[in-house]
Image (cartoon, rainbow, N blue to C red; front, side, top):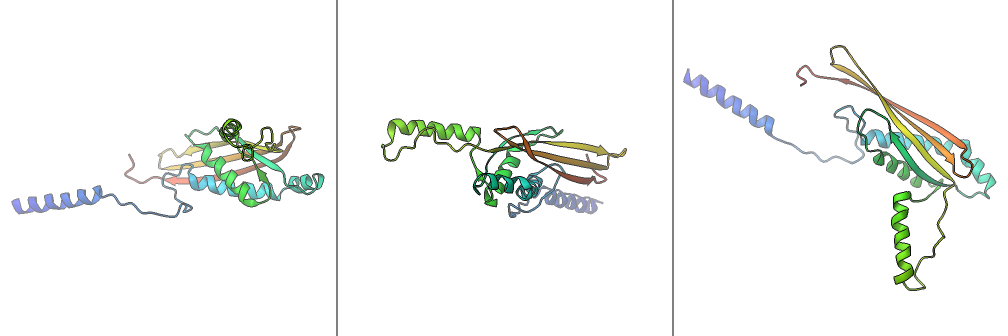
Length: 202
């Protein structure tokens, strides 16, 4: 009897030790990972890339170039509101938008409000401390022609047993002419996820 007790105790200790072991695996930053089924960095990157492709392919871009001596428009990303039920850092999404816009080579891009404040402070500091030849002039900023604004929303549907959840995310973006307030492009991207919980969920 004692022998069986020791065997079972040893097996339990081995099992608990195996469960307590933590393993970390490094993966590429662009690898799609979806552990919880909630909005994540992969969703932000995918939506940003898809919507920028739509913006670049829409008629407003060629129309602008034709009326501005073939110059590329200057764009800025404004505020993208999180109206979902989750805590989502929309800055991750807006940075992905900026990256996709800049890398497209189709538009020119200017810094956002917080970045501009840092740059303006540096420019003012140069007026006092930098040499005349190297200091940057005031009032020579490049004004944006268009601003991208939008919102991110979500809907959750859950089965009566709670074992299956459907998460529906929708991202809406609008491209607005800063001078006239005209909406020149409206885009929407949807993501739907089905989450099936295990039997031993907490």
